Length: 395
Ligand SMILES: *Cc1c(COP(=O)(O)O)cnc(C)c1O
Image (cartoon, rainbow, N blue to C red; front, side, top):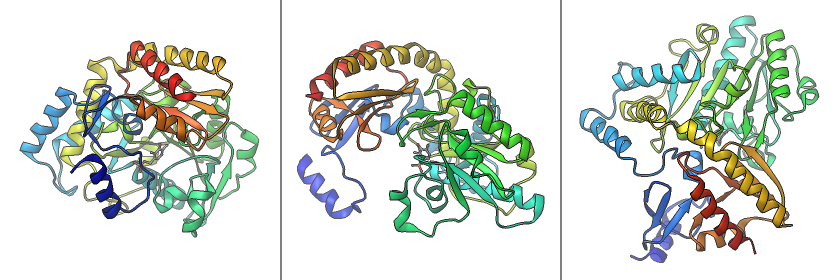
C-alpha cells in the first residue's frame, strides 16, 4: 500500500477523533522524522513535548530491549527493580517524597485529584470539597481531568463531570481568591499553560497562590505534564520560582515515548491521603515503563539536557521575536524555554500545512497559535533551519 492508501485505511478503521495531517510517519532519527515515502522533516513537535532527546537514541533503545528480555510486566502486588530505581531518581530530581506511576498524563491528574479529596476527607469527614482550576487550562480527557480543564467546548458534551469545580484565571489572584470557600481542598494549575496558549504563571501569582494554600491548608497541585522534564530550563518549571507544590503531575517526556506518567506528593500528603486499597492500576509503573523512566532520567544528566535548553532557548526566543518584528501577521510571542508560541492574526492551519510540505513539523495550540515544543537536544542551527522554513510557509 502507498501512503494515500494507508491513510484511507486509517480513516475506515480508527475512530475519527483527530483531524490528522496527511502523512504517515515511519521512523525518526535525532530531530528528524521520515514519512513512509522517505520524505524528511525537521521536527519541532517531539510528539507533543515527549521525545526529549530525539528519536532513535541508542542507549535508550538498548535499555528498553534489555528490559523486554527480562520482564515486561508484573503486577503492582509485587515489587520490581525498575520501578524502585525510577521512583528514587524521580524523587531526587523533583524534590517530592512519594511517587505513584500511571500510564498517562490524564491518569496522573485523576490520581492527584483523588489524593486531594482524600486528604480533605480525612480532615473533616465531609464529601462536598471543592477544587479550583484555571480558565484556559488543559489537564486531559478523562472525566476528572476534563472537569478541571478550563475549556467549555471540551467539557460541555460530557457533563455532568465530577462536581464542585470552580474556575479562576491564571495570573489573576483576585479571581482565584473569589472562588475560595471553606470547602476548597485544592487549587490545580499548569505552571506553564500549554494547550491553553503557552502562558507561564508569573512568580507573584504562584507565590500568592502558595501563600493562600498555606494559610488555609489547601493543597497546591501543579500540572507539569507538558512544562516539566527540563522543557523550561528547569527539571520542573516550579523549581525556577521556589514555590513547591503539595502534589505534582508529570508525564509526556517522562518516558520519552513509552506511555507513562506519575503523580508525586510531599510526605505530609502521602501520609494523609491515599492508603492501601484507595487507588491502583494494572500497568502503571510496570518494569518496561519504569526502565524507560530510569534511562530517561540518567540520560538527562549524562547528556546535559537542561544545560542545552538553557543555551538554545534564548536563541529560539530571539529568532521568534525577530520573525514577529518582520511579519505583521504575527501579533505576539509567548512562552518560556523550549515551550514557545507565536500568535497569528488568523488560524494557523494553512501555515502548518505549508510548513509540512516544506519539511517542517509544527503544531498549533488553539486556533491561532503555532506551538514550538521541539526535542530538547535541538541546536541553534536547527532553530535557524526551522525559522527559514517557517518564514517561507507564512506567506
Ligand atoms: C498532555 C497533557 C495532559 C494529558 O496527558 P495525556 O497523557 O494526554 O493524558 C495533562 N496536562 C497537561 C498540562 C498536558 O499537556
